[in-house]
Length: 137
DNA sequence: GCCAACGTTGGC
DNA sequence: GCCAACGTTGGC
Image 1: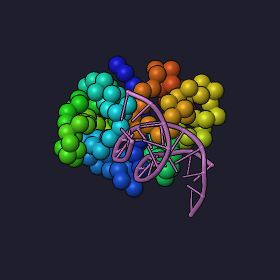
Image 2: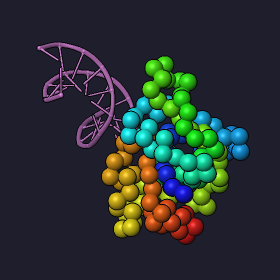
Image 3: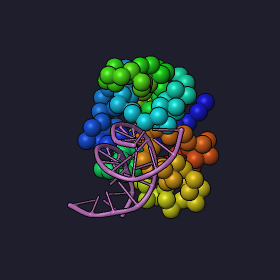
């Protein structure tokens, strides 16, 4: 089961709103980047993803799971892009900040560190476990 | 099909 | 608010 990381600016969609959406989940629309699209298409039912707050917070705040795989994004007039649905899994006990990630030797190769612009990213099992350990500490 | 110009994202 | 990095657009 693959792991991912998705980013959102809290001002447009925050984890608090994701929690309110609850089990029903919400569609992750608005992705307009082909690299990100490839990753969205690769997601499977039940795959888990870290929820990262960009700009305001700059930290991983929770975990979501894929509740519906890739389908067309109705907000894209040209029909080129699609989206998946995410339902909330749980918040992290303690948010893991970008600063902490950059200081962690085991996370230097995270896409978040190397290509901060990409809004949907793959996360390795090792990185996933490391972040979870940091969130529990 | 190349590449310069432009727009957007996101960390600082 | 600035600016670097990156993606996209459009002229040729």
